[in-house]
Image 1: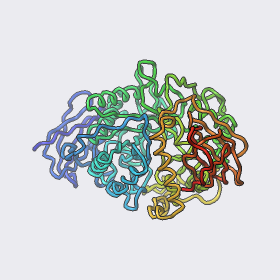
Image 2: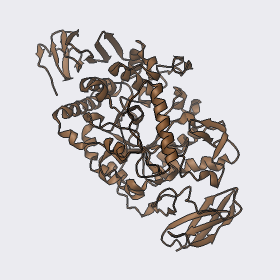
Image 3: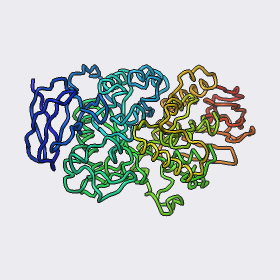
Image 4: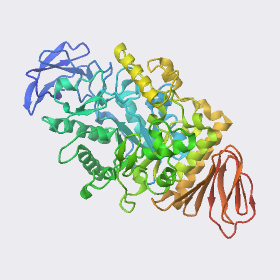
Amino acid sequence: MLQHYSVWAPEAERVDLHLGVSGDRVEPMAPAGGGWWTVDAEPGDGRYAFALDGGDPLPDPRGGRLPDGVHAASALVDPAAFDWTDDDWVGRRLQGSVIYELHVGTFTDAGTFEAAIEHLDHLVELGIDIVELMPVASFPGRNGWGYDGVALYSVHEPYGGPEGLYRFVEAAHARGLAVWLDVVYNHLGPVGNYLPKFGPYFTSRHQTPWGVAVNLDGPGSDEVRAYFVDNVRQWFLDYHLDGLRLDAVHALHDESAIHLLEELAALAEDIGAATGIPRVLVAESDRNDPRTVAARGAGGLGLDGQWADDVHHTLHVLLTGETQGYYADFADPQALPKVLAHTPFFHDGTVSSFRKRRHGRPIEPSITPGWRFVASLQTHDQIGNRATGERLSHLAGRGKAAIGAALLLTSPYTPMLFMGEEFDASTPWQYFTDHSEEWLAESIRAGRQAEFAEHGWSGHVPDPQDPGTVEASTLNWADLHDPGRQQLLDWYRTLLRLRRELPQLRDAALGDGAVAREGDLLLVRRGTIEVVANLGDVPDTLPVPDGSELLVGFGEVTLTGSEVALGPHSTGLLRAPLPDVTGEIPRVVL
């Protein structure tokens, strides 16, 4: 049977299709209008590549599989060949959900989709609704974070390729878990990016931290935009994914009347309506602009949600005391009450000392609900971009990590956990790469050393190229057998159960909470629920309404009448007075 091949190469005068692993069989392609070239040919073993104007064969920019690496031929993928069994899947909406971010390569020792499936039941028991995969588009080498992907339609072969991702999504859906994917549209990696050879995918009219920008608004940009739009369509329809996290959208420079993000939001909405399954788009944005999630008809971009880094930064400063670099702004005493009760943006038009200018835009809670903002204690960025990849518990201790969990999981935002956070993983999560080009490896080493110096971090920095760095960053699931780590896991499970069961937590609204702090004592009120915490190293007491009920505690928590005694780094959840509750509640230690 003949296979139809096509490629967009508007500046080429000749395009040849090379077939087979060796590429020896060559078929000339014919121009089809609009810069496209096509040919129908026998596929043979399924390998194919395109040669422009007599040059070397190059992988297909839209190829679905690169079995031999990013520099070799593409391989055909037939999405219809997979026998899906998730017809009953109805999806998960962002509102009311809890997200779990994981990196396939370090989630298990094997580092594959298949191995990750074995731990999906752990996520269900934890209380997770959505699994967010870090990027899986093909990138150079075996190991990497995935943000230097160069073949956006292809699934990284060492993880299991397309078949592995199909199986992972199907297994997650069978357990009631939605699957999102982190996609990177603001740049491609420096090695194996052949898009510029095919057409004007990039433009020097705009610059990004990675160099020239993706061409979204210049000559030839219609097909470039279609490249990304069709990629979103592929993930939703071919792979049955439920959502996408869009990396650093502030670096998508687009002066068109309809921004690319608005176009993607409309597409996701259309696919959701056609399939009956919500398709969610969440942006990582540095702008602190609520218009990112405002409705398209109201002048917004229409995305479903966006990350809220200000919440992370505020909690990180509270729990660790670190105030270097961009953390300096969040040492402000008003940061905690502001982000926990009123807005995810500490900078909502205020001056940012780190940026040396005003930053952000106010949120109107009656228009933009808190659940549209994804908040976290830990993420791949906030851990992995530290010099040695320390997790929060490594910096502040398990007790303060438990306090942070209580504050996050009772917040009005959509919470996101980073893999291993729930059981105080003993492993760090460091930056690792697998480049064969020594010039690039050395450039990365030097760049990270300079970045850490700006933050005041000195000393040994793990070599990203050392295989030991990725090994050290791989979760050790034997941690679950440690009683102390099991204690924190039970705490997370309990908090997530209460979040589902209690409307004051499940439906918390911006502006409805109250935050009070005196020294090391902290109280956060959500309706009739109060979170109490002792951040200090010595025991202390906190007055509470007479007749309060202790729901759960971590550490040393004792309620007696109108007073709760809190040991060092201890925290608890109380319910406001109930008529039938009197007397002393025994100390609760999970």
